[in-house]
Length: 480
View 1 (spheres, rainbow, N blue to C red):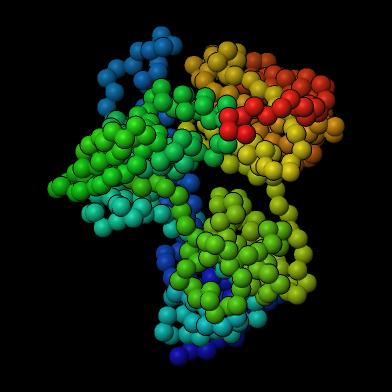
View 2 (cartoon, rainbow, N blue to C red):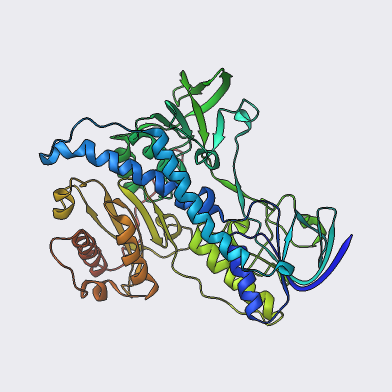
């Protein structure tokens, strides 16, 4: 058994792990990264980048289908599934290659292959070949797609999102389980590429939206194109040859039977913390088995252990993982001098069409018990000029402001080019601008950003009214 002694050990070489390694090394500390799986981040290998390649292909097909509405009539359209997936895999491998180049630049003595697990608060064992004594440890073990119990062990036609990017051709049909970001992005992309797609949801959620008005508009807009089935329960699944017979039950209790070439489970991801020996650390865990940690320092309790990226499940998106890793690595390197790091305004984007974006404080967070009342402004994109020009006039933006200070708090939206509007508004939120200051900014014509101005004007009018007074009317709720 080999024995190593290092200042900092990092479990995982994803986005968070690599950022933590670089930050700890920058502090002048001996640092070791431990990896049990393939090198290359989730984003590059099976996440953001290959999914956007598939979406890009689907957008090309969709624009051809949309062209006649502009008076442009293309010839016969043929979607070559093998060519689509060949480009997805080729470009995916190119992106992974960039990550691998970075890993290759890490000195060999700073890398260790194998599964790392705690054997004590400051000790790790990697497989059966190495023990490590580390003064500080960063957990950056990533996450794994969730597999629903009722679909487990049905057969190889039950897949998760990671598996899609190994396809060599497009299938005839896919059932997508889940209406989160991953399920909607992949479901819509496959549909636009000629795959018969049905999307099933246990509830009524759409991506990361919590604002009921935006959620309603989003469900309606996406259902114009997709077979969206909300309030569904999976009763059973059976693989018969190269198809899966899927039985579901709707809210009224009626059962439906469908056959699909694949069932794609996109029900979220779970942190990889259950097999790394956390019981040996003495850390306090939450109900999900994740160590309690400070979101500004990534420190677990008051210990020498830090947790970053998808492993802590706080904001499981790549930009946040990079920030988590840098903060965790900085603090592991300088421990016990632990300092808060830069946490940016939350920003999440779903690359559906229309796109979905949330930023700052969400509607749900602002409605939490004990929170002060807030004002809301909104705009529909149905009649927004530039949106109509592009035949992308679907969606809604709702913006939130603080009474008294008139500070901009956040927004939720579905609409054209929400990825751009989301960044614009997130920057304003992080700069702590007031609504009046935002309205003083330049707006060109004709641009989609004029819709932002309309929503902000609506919000400003609401803020001018002042905080609504609490109702003194008796509560006539039935049963009270």
